[in-house]
Picture 1 (tube, rainbow, N blue to C red):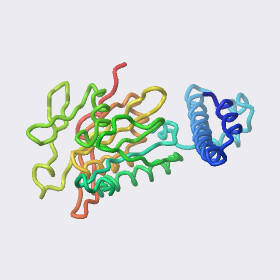
Picture 2 (picture 1 turned 90 degrees about the vertical axis):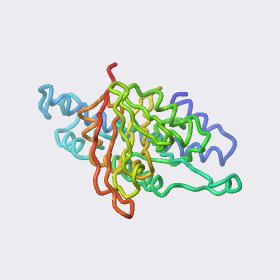
Picture 3 (picture 1 turned 60 degrees about the vertical axis):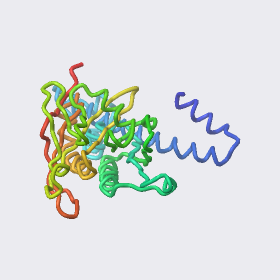
Picture 4 (picture 1 turned 45 degrees about the vertical axis):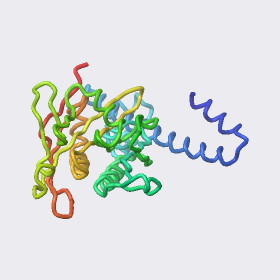
Length: 277
């Protein structure tokens, strides 16, 4: 449905609660699109400048003052926000119950919660609105729109479906131990922490898929702390990924952590792999 159709649908909805809810959703959606348009305008100005036009010439062609061009270049959201799509972005983590009797009591791994919170902070820094969703043990699909799925393959089918689309990396379970595998070379990457709990090094998987006009970022640590390590790495490198690897698909990230499960360092150990399309 186009914007005009959505607008008319809200105006004509006889249910006041539903009308208010949908109006709120559309306000957020349109604000995110306006922010993305501001980013695209800034990017277009810089591209035109690199092509040889002066900022004065660009201002004349766009019908604005040179001072306005300066404001746009200074105040527009950063280009790397596009790594996560347009927004709003749904950020999901797996829920679990210790047993069937506790199915009504939702439990979340503290490292997954910390990962979700860190991603939300980064999204806010990039002028992106975010919402939360729970990944049930039987969840197969990602919610509509842009999303960050923080989920290992053993936690839910949705993670396995996302992994199946990656031609470069995959997860392999060998006698109960999970490894990340480079599909081309066959090299396996294991978690030192999973192998020896006294080790404070873990690894995880980072991927980005673009399908049907939306972006899905997938974060999957071998353990929950590995996922937090990926979020830590993304904070400092999302600009680099966006600018240097426009076709980024996936990578293996290794992290260091302390006794409180706080990340003290992170680095890429395989990749970044890129699409060849």
